[in-house]
Length: 308
Ligand code: GYE
Image (cartoon, rainbow, N blue to C red):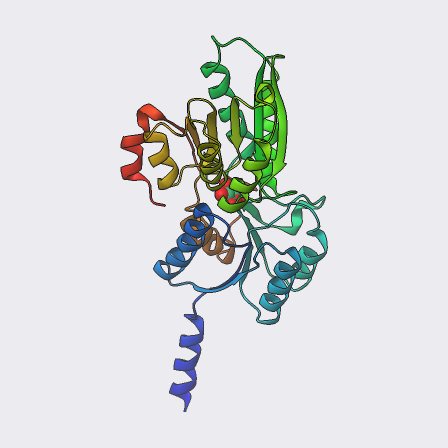
């Protein structure tokens, strides 16, 4: 009996760490790769993962977090669909004594002690990269240059910050104007649908540039552009963000002009962070994976190394 109890305790001591992860949805190739990365990394590091897909609903994310609190997970990870409205639920996690890691997108809360760290890309910088590419590309082209923008999910940090970063650069030329801007939810279908609408303008108002906040929307838009009898990548210069294989293929085919990299493979960083937290070590408040931009010259080579 003595022996049994001791052995039981040993087993408990080795109990795997449990992470509850509230994933925001499955809207894009990036998101699928992100989910897969978290699943694989958990498996590899022997961490047990509870994953809930919120299908773009913040209330569903709140439910998931409450469920994780009820189940007394060790760490809660959240990929937040929008950036506002998180204080209350983060407070609940704090009261329960469960540390929270924000993954991918960021939250906008006054009290930053409500989460341990944010692991994710610098979206503002991604917008800046797209803008800089465009300025270079258009340096010998006289204005006016009309830009259409397909935004991601309204209120999401990547959409807000990519838009701001892009504008901060493009404003250097007063004859370069964002004449059209509309959200298309980061999905291919919406990208196509909204682009069709944006092309319903007189020829002299048509955009010469499209900045899509992700690849999926750019891919949908490319279809709409072709159906309108225009040549994507030529009649309309197209920029997007992420760097999925399909986008890099279109880049290589000349239908996309530049793709800013955004790295979805955050699983290993999340598992590492969870272990550090449980070991009582402190973490930097922000962890950003290094990222680049893909151009047509580099597309062929890049495709081979791209994981999603
Ligand atoms: O760019 C987009 C996805 O939050 C960085 O969300 C992520 C974005 C990504 O749907 O494709």
